[in-house]
Length: 280
Image 1: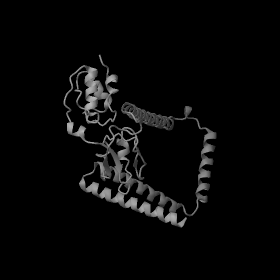
Image 2 (image 1 turned 90 degrees about the vertical axis):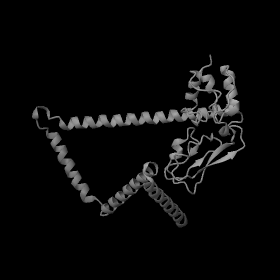
Image 3 (image 1 turned 180 degrees about the vertical axis):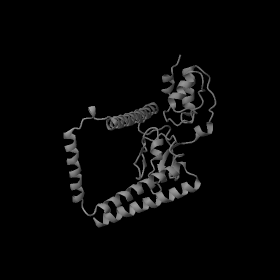
Image 4 (image 1 turned 135 degrees about the vertical axis):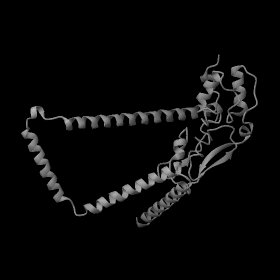
């Protein structure tokens, strides 16, 4: 009896979800359990369908999305002039084929793109296009179909491992912070042993207060200006985060306002960069 691993090895590993499952592995598991047909993979097309049929000793079936399977393969392309650096496409790409960072232009790695199209829906400014290519299979990183699929699967698995590691690290960090907070609360609420006064502690507190007063006297006169800059920076970051949230979850008016703000912000940053370059 064919295992899910045997079936998954025949799939193109685009992780596109066009089969109705959350990736190639879940689709293979469903086929192995007899819960899904062999005709649901548009990227694999007729070739993969017939290989699955042979492996499962089943008759070939007409592809469910024959029109989609017959269209040329596509590569994603980002219009960098329109990109607002929201990172939505980076988070959506299952094989880490998009490079970039928050508030910076993003670029698709053409040799790694599997043409899954998952980066299109989350883009708030529709700056991603799909360019048809003559390739019989993707990604281009490997010259043979199954080698290319294995390469894409490796990139997908590495991404999943990285995301899990980051999630674990964040959970550990939050747990550590919570434990430290509880310990601090406990220390603050515990009375001194037998109600006794600790002279050394009193002296240390007095010295700390004296040092604080001395530090206040030596604070430079531009402290308020520095504080105002800090507040302005914090407000700017908050506005940027709010705009990023609105382009994804706001109503039409909020999305339009957020996109306008992000475009203006990007133009201002580019102007500032150009001015700094000329000054240098």
